[in-house]
Amino acid sequence: MQPPSPSSTTPPGAPPRNRLVALLAVGAIFLLAVGGVVGYLIGNSAVGHATLRVNVENRLATTQTAQVTVNSRVMGTLVVPAGQTMPLDVAVAFATANGAIFEIEAISTGGQDASSVFVNTPGIFVVGLRIG
Image (cartoon, rainbow, N blue to C red):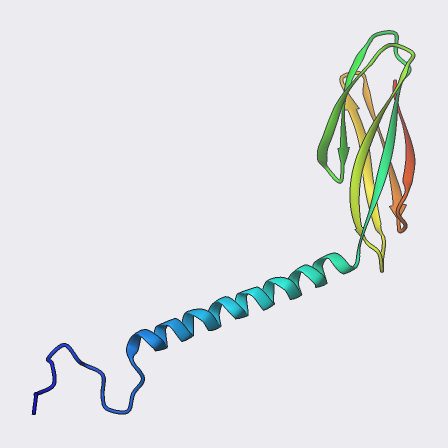
């Protein structure tokens, strides 16, 4: 009879250690995949998308550079010639069940203007702002 090898540390009746580690790894990957799919479905199921068309009118006699912000976040910069109106399209996302209010502001050295719009359906929402 041959004595057991000293490298064998598995107690009798227990599964080999490498099988247990592999089983745990497969189980963890499966749970991560299921969690990712569920999170994706919940996160995207009730989100709508719309466009805010911001028209910035310059009533001053000089060209103005205006920063357009939506909810205090800079979304773009427009150079608006004197007496002209320039558009800026801003894509927004909102919860379809509740809608969302977006605060839009145009800021330049010649002045600023702000407005808000309630968005609850996909589409294009026109917002007019004036400088000067």
